[in-house]
Amino acid sequence: MEIDDEILTEFYDNRYAVQGMLIYKKNALLVVREIQKILEEKLEKAGHEPVLFPVLIPEDILKKESEHIKGFETEVFWVTEAGNNKLDKKLALRPTSETPIYTMFSLWIRSHRDLPMKVHQTCAVYRYETKQTRPLIRGREFLWNEGHSAFKNSEDAEKNVEDIIKIYGDLLNELCIPYRIHRRPEWDKFPGASYTLAYDTIIDGKILQIATIHNLSEKFSEAFDIKYEDEEGNHKFVHLTCYGPSFGRLLASVLNIHKDDAGLKFPAKFAPVQIVIVPIFAKGNKEGVIDYCRKIKEKSDKFRVVLDESDKTPGEKFYYWEKRGAMLRIEAGPRDLENNEVVVVRRDTKKKEKIKIAELTDEKIAEIFKDIDKNLRESADRKFNGAIFKANTIEEAKAQIGKGIIEIGLCKDEKCKNEIETYASVLGTEEKKEKCIVCGKEGKVAYIGKTY
Ligand SMILES: [Zn+2]
Image (cartoon, rainbow, N blue to C red; front, side):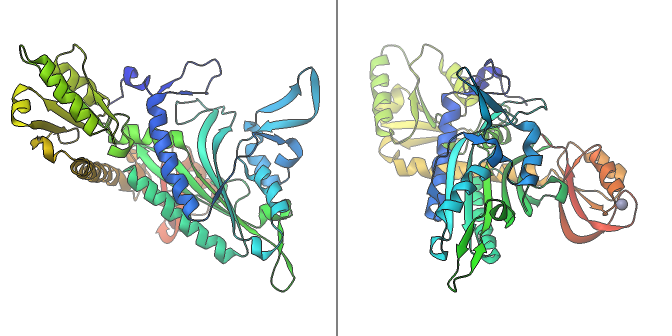
């Protein structure tokens, strides 16, 4: 079920004069800011310092690590003129920030006492996408958070990868987004990395990469000459790791994974409107009911709450706010006013409950929200797990393409990989033996699917 355009225009506008560059509107930013807040707090608690680097990168710095630039070359936006002058040195709009950040790491890191050094920044990055752009999912400008950290040795770097897996896992758990972590095959890893772990979720049968973690080992520190002096006075290269989730893709996941036939649903913390209050009028006592509803609104001001005082009928209001994913509806009419009660309706189960106004506390609401999240998480997990398949033959695999993640056997032969990649992407491989579904020879377990 597609999300109505009318609803999407409350999140973004895609009609800007530069193709692939999106205007984020209020509802999108409410979700994104919540994601950003949670993530930044977790990263900083784990020792990352916030930084904000300039958007421009001089050409020679961007090109310092050869594999890296090869991977991004065709996607870079270049600034070649300033005012009336042609620049001597072209400047790139950052496609990602390894190169500027590691240039500074080489100045900031001197001794083992400077390590670990961990920084993160929330920013926009720019990539000249030649594939069809798609709002929130594939843009030429996109919002993300990128973390970069330097360590004394590979053990510390590996330990940091584990820490980030935990942090991203906690964030995705709060968003109720199911995912799998795939170790990307050699030909699809981040340019310059020794390995890439990617977070894949499933939207309408297709695979969406929502975050990545890269272990860069010593490649970038050699290119950028990032050395430290150890306890014995030896000079050594640092080990680098970098990682980032895309905020646009996380938002796209939240919108598309939790929706149902009635419209959007959100984990309660992320709902642009968490509570809607709908007054139910009868003849003659409009003032009293409105007054009662205003008091409820004031009482619940810890949440994002709207009192719908418009002229629409209650039924129209229910429909309007269900579509927009207001996760809790509070109805109050004359009889409720008399009995000091309200009717509370959950967006996920549509279950109605009468509650005494004195019992409608922040704690009670938080408790309902917690249960809504649990319910959303369970139903998203069920859907996700129902989109994981195993195929023993190429025909079986083909029948499931576009429906989710398919486990197959694949050998090392380039021909077999190319055959698979004509209709699906290899998301990851595992060190587990399995017969290749293309040629029948011995291979390894691989996961494939159609990607966005
Ligand atoms: Zn094969």
